[in-house]
Image 1 (cartoon, one colour):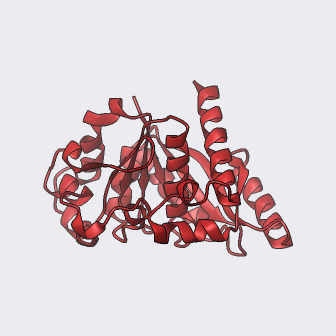
Image 2 (cartoon, helix red, strand yellow):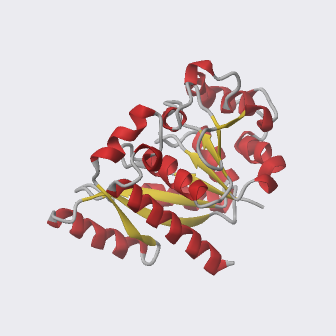
Length: 257
């Protein structure tokens, strides 16, 4: 049975898609069978994996709104052990369409059930907003991975995010848990970055990964080439950091088991 994880932060620009693409690719490289779902209408995870949003026949939209079997929307990528279900622009209208559907909060959960035995991990890239797509994600997953940037307003919106998780846990998904917190855009030369790390660690008490994702030019360039950073530049600091994070992630999971 796979573990299903939402990569979620209501605040935009925190490295959510970067973490989703590069952590999943690194875990695939380590031999784990991965499925990535792009639930963000911007489709950045889709293009980050080199998939042309405009030429995909079936996307997560058809799975959720037209009851398409999710297996028909799964695309094999050119990267080790990673499949993807793409997003396309019509997903932006799904928020309104979902509101009239029966059991609307459980549509994604039900769609995933038939394939949970086929993967080790399923990662969902959520939109940076609280709507029906995000509620569907949080209802369908086992845990939430929270990316936070090492910047001045790092914890802005986090209390609202935690309130959202608490609400979904109490009403829709009692087993929902925090997977961990990933700190990105870290600059060891800047006092601010170091202060933010300490502040986030105090707030989340034991849930923050030791691995810090640095500011890295190659990491920023990789999406424009449609590749996770490990396939774009296997020797850069961004690659090293995400491989370390993948190792830490898997080690912690195995400790739990």
